[in-house]
Figure 1 (tube, rainbow, N blue to C red):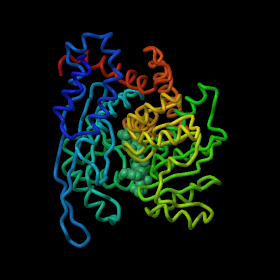
Figure 2: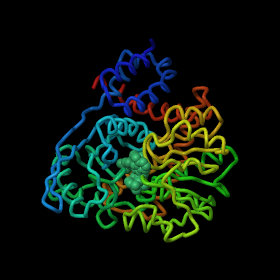
Figure 3: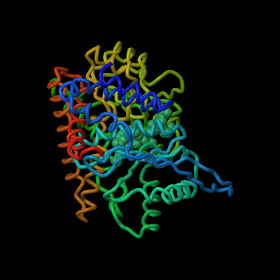
Figure 4: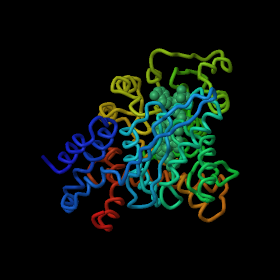
Length: 443
Ligand code: NDP
Ligand code: 2IT
């Protein structure tokens, strides 16, 4: 058995039940076989074993009181995976499905994504199995304050800087920041995705979705193509999905379908994004409400959004939401490109099917890096105690995403795997982290 396969089988043995972590690690490590063949010193230094074992995983109890006086207990997590190239950086996810394996997969992916941005940020992730759906603002605040009362000990502007992810947006970041400031007395850039009145960056809200479209635009242009006139399907109706839809539409595409966790909408005239924003961002309701704004649209709770024929598919909801049979349908319907706004939304067999069919497939760690890149720009602005205009941040984001595309494209070619952007992203993201780890000695 080769070095990489040995590391994978030990990782599966030592981390039983963490299936999403196994999936993410296997994909990255298998891409690195060629790199490890060229660098036998990595095996001697146990580089892959060190890379796949988090620096530390912090697990804690989060007790909070609901509006009726009932006490609840949730699990809290922060996995500080790797800080070879900068402070730990990565979001917090609040969703009932959250467990250690999911947080570890997200933290592991974050190492390579953050490296690709070219900015000095390491990889981490956290969250809780708390479900914000249906909770009052006061209940969400009580949870966030309790969560931060434990988390504050382990984070800091130069140590570990959390941000949003599923279930964590501006409201939650505000409560978390308020509690951090209250406990520590520090006014520092310890979280990103902050409100604009207290240190947030313009364009952070839009950044992941816009960045995805900037990346896909660079990819399409490299093939002499563009978003103009394309039919697009976007899964999800949260932060990433909404701003991917906005930018794709600005570039001349027509987004015809979106979904949330209960159903999907189909609007042949093109999604009315103002309606979706009102329903999801303002009212925090279900997409079934969309019909009230657009009576000619369709709302479905059966079937899947991937049955809708499109040129470009953008999965922007959650992990493993696009399976092999969905990929086969999309390919049959003539999809030309798939760009991951979510983290690991495509199962490995589905990703492989896209590549085999010649579909341009862009993995999340490259395509959705615009969010964390702009978080790093927020950290920069906080350190400088100043703020850039929307146009300045957006221009930097665009430059970063085009640069990521070229890095990924060139790394794939350098290993004789042109258009294999999985290999390109993993190899390009790994190289900088590996160099830094080798320089730091055995730590
Ligand atoms: P949000 O919470 O804003 O939105 C998530 C959306 O996906 C919601 O519409 C939600 O539906 C839907 N969704 C979540 N889980 C499921 C599920 N199990 N089945 C079907 N639909 C589901 O999160 P974000 O938009 O921030 O995150 C979306 C994805 O993008 C995640 O994979 C995240 O890790 C990734 N990402 C986020 C970044 C960011 O900056 N926010 C950066 C890079 C990646 P409902 O409305 O019903 O809850
Ligand atoms: O998955 C991700 O990259 C994020 N949720 C954003 C992390 C961040 O620190 O902005």
